Image (cartoon, rainbow, N blue to C red):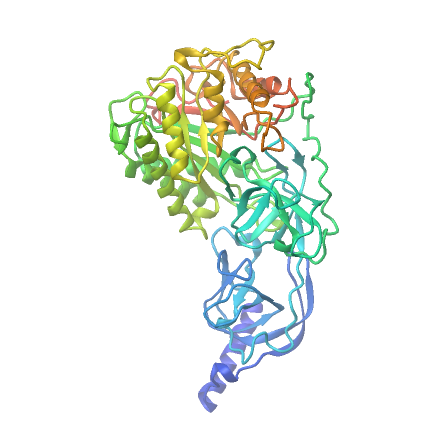
Length: 582
């Protein structure tokens, strides 16, 4: 009905224009009408709106800027509920009008085309147009649950518009920057009182940003944003809770001290691969499968996933890799295309979840993986950062569709048993970090490191081939913008990684910049069960890791992801046994 009325009004206006000569845009004005509209994204309602002429196909954005396209307006005489000042646009001012459009952009169907239109696309004589009220800022609650880098859990979050590029801080003050928020529609889990900021109050909101800064990788961009950068009608907002360390995950408690309690529910298993065939159609299909799994597993919260594609060791000049278990050499550009095909398939098949609570889509984090075998140098580290940067730029150029449901990081299966020495591996890691802002995930092993939980972690114990606990700690945390998703396919490995994290928390306690301490930030756990090789299932591996980390309060955390890896050839039936996902 709304579309019909708009088209009818547009036809009347067009007819009048043909008979009397269309008025120039500079002479146009808006008219007020008593009409009720409710925005399902914020819960705000309006009893009167303003009808204004506008360009057909005008874009609509999530905020008063052009960073996030959410829809389009096809009709040329449309209603607008309010305006907001924001980014300056081609019309020469910073006024944006809020309305509901006719079409949604891909990935934003849950917003039902509600968004801001730049004033340049309206036929107004002055901006803001007289009679159009200013938009009241607001937050809206979602049923998403969130767990931060320290294992703190919240059963719900609150969305609000935020300033693009807003800084995030380690505490409710501006002393230590830990990350940045690029998106303009962001969620927050709680607030805290702290230092007074430019907004004139002392309220800060806790959230996870889009980018980390150097030396703060373990926080995964979790930090406090000053209320001046958040669009709220009051601070603190009336329903968001105060920050008090989060709460207990459903089904169990976070372990503290030397005791462990009921194991929390393991996240659904994500599917990763040793790549043995550069088949982009297959990669697209893998992406679609993971998207369908994430949608199906979004029951009490939005299920995001972390997957790794292991492309083997790098060639001597860093221009490609040798695929795992094969002599096949593939180029970096082919690797980039493969990952882009996976992201495309994921986006094609992902569907919104919890549509009654706004726009919520599952999201995939893709680790582009190599290893410290064959050629391991600073030059190959820089080359791998180039691969990650290329795909990251490709996704960012498609932030309105494919890039809205996927992001990429670097990944490296770093093991003492591989040919790359610890000196060469450290050089590779440092060069990678110097060449990209993206995270590096170590999905390797800790061969030869201590396994007794009574080990004195004040001492830097030796591991195999000249490596030490300090070395594995450094490539997984100490270098910054780093994390680990270690392989846990036997009973010793979770002990090794828990002890290395405990060593880091001990050896680097003095001057530690992280609120949660300097243990390794484990984003997840993976195993070989799907290949038919490992003795641990995904559940066993994840539970063991959680249990051993929980024996020390400084390392206790709930890993956010569980992953299994399989050969792509097994997934297509060319090997036996086929992938045994658990």
